[in-house]
Length: 265
Image 1 (spheres, helix red, strand yellow):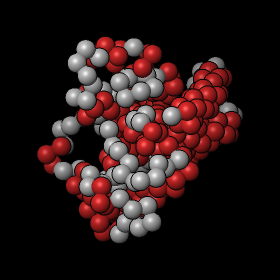
Image 2 (image 1 turned 30 degrees about the vertical axis):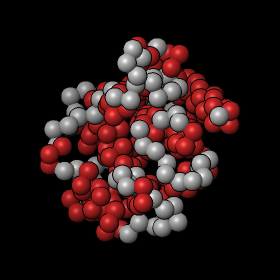
Image 3 (image 1 turned 90 degrees about the vertical axis):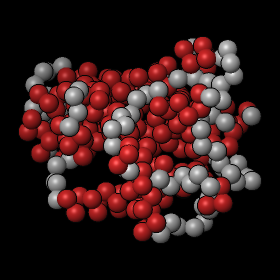
């Protein structure tokens, strides 16, 4: 688990400001990659075509998101400074280090979010990974987090619909919709990877707020797609809308629970 080395514990707003800087740099680097390699296909489409299944594609998307974010969470506490904007060249260097050739065969797995902390779990407490009672703690497993499971399944369904209509990736509105659906899962995972200790809980909240923003955007774009003949089955739209609407609401509840945990400590 990453720890926040600052004397003052950050709330969700300070963490959100910091994460916004990270995402701005990530966006710049992705634009650089797209310009350099000249692939105009949507990011989710490229990942889907390189994956063996829809669930694997989502895991790859999450992996990439976490790698980009990890590049700006220094291991050395002396390197942390919210006021200093990282130099573009330094940031790109950190990203490239994250994609080191030695790691090219590594694949994301949900349990990877917990591997780095597993050694810290006291002997005899491993059972807590299987218990829903400890899901909102550093002893828990993201597999037991309901909003994550729903978001992951929803992403897989949306990608399956895209596979059944191979031309759908040329629709800009659908591209936005798929991207936001995948971001929901990725941001939940990013928050979970930070953990639930007081010094990082604000970051966990901030990431889940970004998942909530993505859910709201996805609802808006889904409504725009209703009459675009994207969905071959007549009930696809209504099923997706109902699931996404409920997920959006559950995310709001989850964020409130995290806030209550933050302020009760």
